[in-house]
Structure formats: C-alpha cells, structure tokens
Length: 278
Ligand SMILES: Cc1ncc(COP(=O)(O)O)c(C=O)c1O
Image (cartoon, rainbow, N blue to C red):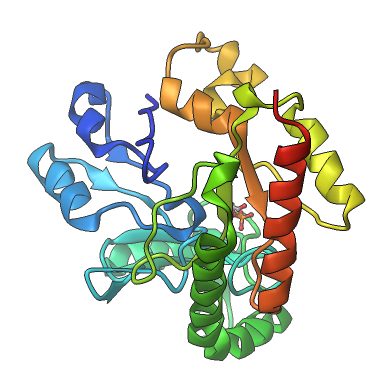
C-alpha cells in the first residue's frame, strides 16, 4: 500500500500511515526525499505501536540527521545508496546498516552467492545469494568520499540557503521545507507555478537548458507509472504526490557550485517565469 506524501516535507505523510495499515502490512518503508529525514520519533512510535518493522530508504539521506542523531543510527535495517548522483559515491553501490547478528550474517552471505568460507579453506553454500558485493575499488573510493561527507553537507546547506535568499518570491515557485539542521540537501526542488505559465515543465527544462543550466524531475508520482496503473492505481488516488510529481523541478545543487552559479540559476528561473506568465 502506498501512502500519500505531506505537501510541506514531500515525505510520507505520517498522519495517514495508521489508516493505510492492513493485516498484510509487515513493514513501513519511508523515503527521506531529497535528504530531508522522515520524523524518526513519530515513525518509530507508529512502528512500535503497530508491531511493524521499519525499512529505512536512506538512499538520499547520507549525512542527514534527526534530533542531533545521524541517519543510519536509528533503525535496524537502513539502506543507503552510493550511486553516482548521491551526496557521497562509490560510482555504483550502497550499504545496509544492520544491528542483528544473525541478520547481518545472512545478508553477508546473500551479498556474495551465499558462500561461507570455512576454516579449512573449503566453502559451504546454504542460501541462494546473489552478487551484491561492493568491489574493493569502489569501497576505497567510498572511504575517501566518507572523509568529505561533513564538508559536502555543509556546502550543500549553504547553497540551499542561498537559493532561499536569491529566488524571487514573485516567481510563485513553491520552495522545499527550510531545514538547515537535519536535511543534507541532496536536491533542491521547486514546484513550478505551471497553472500560471504559458509553458509546460518540459518547455521550462528546455528554456533552462538553452541558458546552459541542467535540471531534472525527481520524481513523477509512482502510482501513475504504467506498472502501478496495471495494479489498479488511478489519478486522484494520492493528490499530493500527483501535484508534486507534475510540477516538481530539480535545480542544480552540488558542493562544487559557486555562489554565483546559484545566482545565475535563480536569475534564469525568474526570467523564464516573467517571460511566460499567462
Ligand atoms: C530514494 C531512493 N531509493 C533507492 C535508490 C536506489 O539506490 P541504488 O541506485 O544505489 O540502488 C535511490 C537511488 O537512485 C533513491 O533515490
């Protein structure tokens, strides 16, 4: 079962979780969208009360925290991504944070073809594993990246702050929740005022591109993708996700950006909106 998102945080709407739980529900699977953590206290309160496990999708929230505690240190099953576009990367790959010894042992075996190496040099296989190991080369890259995580996060927060300072409120863009303490600012996403523009989002992306600025869409509402429509989901099922999914635009944000780059993006967004008002 999906749960609609909260308009402000753009994360799972925790107010709606209880109503979505059925007898078949085994776990809650929250995503920390754009690196803004889902409220860990409320999340685990629901999980405890309803006897559910939490599988934290912390793919985007490496370096983020909640209540002064780092994401990754709350749950007993946290998944992190080190994909090339994440705040720290190993090119491809990721990791699981686990706390249970037996589960850690199982995941270690599943990671590489189920193989257990025996003291006498032999091998045993009792579970069908896959090939999910991080290569040594990738791990080495990751260790180097890890040292820079806090500096990357600090720089991203400054750049995000600058977006708030420089994006003209007159544009009518809806900005993400302002949080420079918990959020790692994996992305900076505005909701475009498309109903007031003579331009589609595709046209907007093109206009930015013509000014030498890349942008992206993260993400269209998942339940409206073909696969999920076949499962019976329809427009109107999750209105907040649909509104965000149809108007969201990811603006450039990476630690190597100069302050003046943010200014240039903000000027371009303002100009495109001024030129295309209905
Ligand atoms: C929210 C979220 N979950 C999961 C993933 C998957 O991570 P990976 O590509 O490392 O498997 C991503 C990465 O794009 C993501 O952003």
